[in-house]
Every structure is written in C-alpha cells, then in structure tokens.
Length: 289
Image (cartoon, rainbow, N blue to C red; front, top):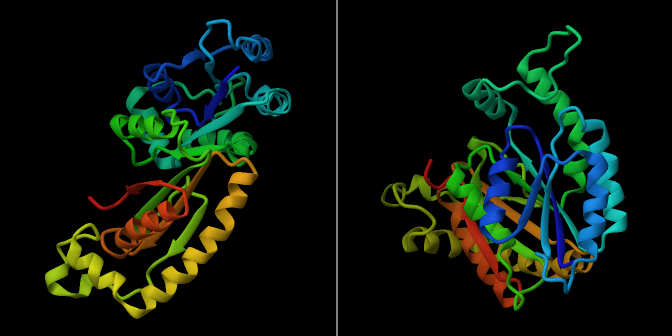
C-alpha cells in the first residue's frame, strides 16, 4: 500500500469536508466504518500495491458510540501499518457550539440515559476523550477560522503529492495574539519585542507584505540578531524532525494584530528555510482582520 490516512477529530470540526477534499485529490475515502471492520480494511489495503487498486486510502473515524474503541484502534493500526498518517481536525469550543446550533444536529456524546449536559459540556467531554489522538496526530488542522475554501486549500497543500520535495511538509504562519494562539502549530515565536510599524503613521495601514513595512521590520538591528540565531536553530532542528519521521511541521510567528511584524518575519523565514532545502508554504492567519 502506498499510504493510509486516518481522519479523526472533533465532531463539527470538518471531518466530512476534509474527506470530500481528499476524494477530489484522488484518494479512496471510506467514512463511518464500524471500528471492528477498520483493521481488516487496512490489512487488505496493505497488500493492494501493484494490483491497480487506489493506493491512497483515507478512513474517516467518528467519535459517537464507538469513541472508546477509536483510540486503541488507531494505536493498533500505527504499530501494524508501515505508511500510516493521522490527521486530526480541531476547533475551538465556542465555534463548535455555533456550528451545532446552526445545524440542530445531536452531538454524538449526548447521553440517552436521562443525564442532561450542556452542548459545551458534551464538546469538552469529547475533547478529553480524543486528546490521545490529537497528541499523536501527524497533522492537526484548526478549522476555527477556516471557511470551506480555506480548508480545501489546506488539505490540498498537505496532500498534493510532490516526489521531488522533502518528505516533511513545512508551513510558516503569522498570527495576531489578540486573535488567540493557533492550535495547530508546532513551534511558536513571539515577535512583539520588535519595533512596531503600527506606531509609524505612514505604515499603519500597510501590512508586512508591503515593501516599506518589511524593510522597516527587517532593517532593525534586533531583527537581524534574532533572525541570525533563529536560522541557526532551525537549521539544527529541522533535519532531526525529519529524521524522526515528522510529516508536517508548522512554525508560527505572532505579533499583536498579525498585520506587520509577524507577517514580515514569516515571509523572511520561509526564504531562509528554502535555502536549507525546506521550501515552506506561508499562511497569514490574521492579516485580513
């Protein structure tokens, strides 16, 4: 088998949408299988190479009534399947509450024994139950601020095959602390110690993608010292992440609003990573807010 992907995550976080996006990329997707059947499907797929059968299989696992079986099941698959990746879809609790209220669907953790729990409590119970999956995931995607088109782009970016590139896909993200820390990143660097272009009147309405702002940020002496040391750190640790088999790495840079400093730094770091053989995609989470 070329590859087996398990799609897990919080109810309402976008598992079905992610599955549809993968189908558009040519994956064979199986949704809502009883857990008892998943090991057999994985075993059959393991021996499908060279048979003409689609060698990219995605299994969507829900939490519902089977939630107690999902965590040990995925652990078992990890030990028995050579090329397995786990993607976890997450979202903030308040976002999931709004999504459920708009659809009027019943949450899968709702009890049938008469116990009454609020929707927020049900979501938090599911979050606790699925935390081992999230912790062990190869890729976590926080869909709190993503619309369906942005999620499609993230899936396409992560799963479009490119045999000429490195085995680890790297993303550099900028964000604003006032909009909250991103949930789906591996390394976070705070850029709020850098001089802020917001206080320069002619730069305030621009972003770090504009040359005057980028020049202002990058030409500060402290920025040069920061980037020099950061470059050394990343050139040291990225090969070890790859050596450990990490499939996805996201490095995030934050400033106050996510418009100026973090954007300029993220763009520059992506250039530095390319020099080390790690071409990175760049995402500016809060630049339009």
